[in-house]
Length: 192
Image 1 (cartoon, helix red, strand yellow):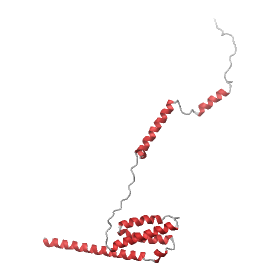
Image 2: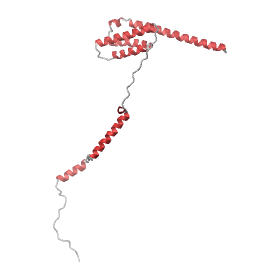
Image 3: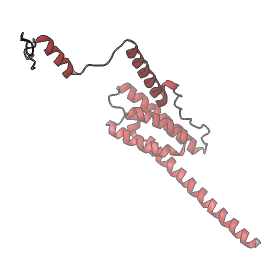
Image 4: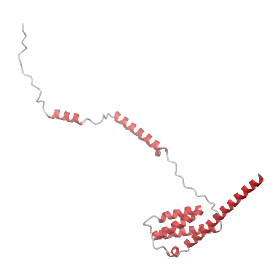
């Protein structure tokens, strides 16, 4: 029984050592690729097009995922570069900041410095009661009731029916010719 435990523990240690070795190799590979990307002449002299710069930035961003805080800062700047119509000065200064962030991330990876800062995502501020859906519905209902009360109070009975209104207008405009006129007649004859 003790030997089987020993075998399991030694197996776990071997697996853990293999995982650490793989992680170390991955980190070394990331460091190598970051160094290659940061040493390109285009980084100093400038890229030929915005597309080439964005392709370089995408590669660096994927490698910086090993350092979460640098990746987050780098992605913020990359979002700025994706905006079309930027001035050359803003584009250049944003790119220099991105290169600086990538160099900091490379330094941390080379010296095995863990990221200590956790990035807090900003929370949306709490809305007031009248900005929430139920508050909007409540305000709409209350304002409708107030308007209905005011309409009742001041005697508004709603629009009249157009057919009824036109009939009233035609009656008042034309004299009554269809009504038979009374003529004097003799009194009715009664039979005896």
